[in-house]
Amino acid sequence: MSRRTADYIRVVDSITAQIRAGEFAPGDKLPTYAQFADRFKISVTTAQTALRILRERGLVEGHQGKGTYVSERPELGWCGQVARVMWPSLVLGPGKGGPSLPQRLPE
Image (cartoon, rainbow, N blue to C red; front, side):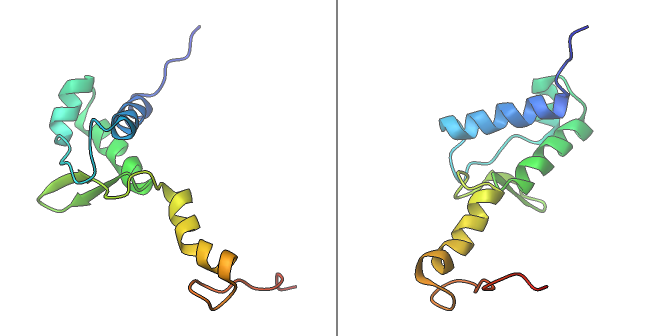
């Protein structure tokens, strides 16, 4: 019995690939939930789930009443966002441009 990829994962992977390939550029408005549902032959709820995951990963931004847009820096998922915040402290040291890190973990 072959395992089928969940629909929302298939949509997330497809849209992520399109963003990475430049088919959707930073600032581009994405199709509506209904349009994604029609395109991928899925429910609107599944389309909403996929776009929520893309928002959580930092690839897209939702604007109430206006739509969903590709983030200005879509190459930065959550890991990249953490690195961007932490990098100044790691390179320059605590208090030199980023949040300070404890010298050792509390006991």
